[in-house]
Length: 355
Image 1 (cartoon, helix red, strand yellow):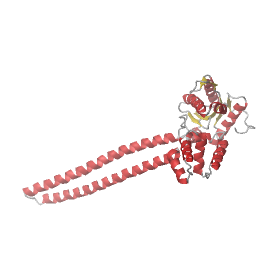
Image 2 (cartoon, rainbow, N blue to C red):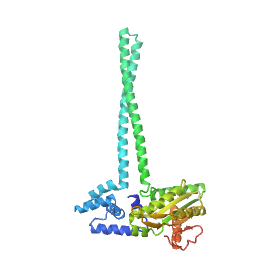
Image 3 (tube, rainbow, N blue to C red):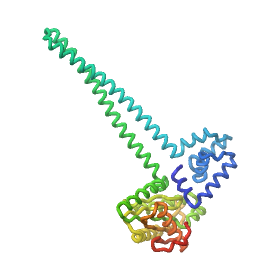
């Protein structure tokens, strides 16, 4: 599933998107298998995307989307399956390299054993005080054997060098694939999975080291109005604008991620909720200070504002519970008029439902 679709189905529009996908599948008489459902979610969430265009092409030809065709579409276009293919290809290539190395080592071992026997035989002959002609022949034999061993060793060394470089290349490639799988394609921020993984690690580290950890959830105000009025491409432009300012304010060790469709989350290791509230208020002011224009027509889009909620990890918190408190704080900000930050540590959240 692409990062954009993954973000969309974790947003407040998730159930509407799921229903729309199922309705379209029913109209097209497509069985709602997990893979087909994932493909149709891409069609709904990315109507101009490659999957939607390919499905539209197949439908225009009167084709029925079989399981085999769905698999081909998935392998070609879904990042998850492409990642699996990349890993499988790298594994196969590495296996080929190891087979070649083992073959070269085996040949070198055979050559070394034969060379040892040749030296042993030469030693016995020399002990028998051979004639000059025999010594000359013995030297020639040793010279030939030595050159053969040197050649085998050179071949092995070359093969080892090639494999070392290939392993470095594969490691670099897989690391890039891993980074791509943990990055949101639209914003280049970390994606939900990367954030969840880092949140768990950060919670464990904060408890182990008795250090403070705060988390924040940020939501673009009235985002649906941007999409309904200007379309999804302009909506994406707004998301990129906000994410760029979030990224600029989230230098290490902070970690910013696109958490849902128009939601973002930030980890603040070593910073209290009060400190984070100040940082988020500065970020809100920065975001709302600029009037945006539609890129394609230069039409005035007005100012964008965001609401935020922040919570600090308690000793008995799980990653889920601290995020739930930050989400409740965000809900308070929304209900209080938006364009504000709520600190869960000072707000009365006991009676507030989750956002």
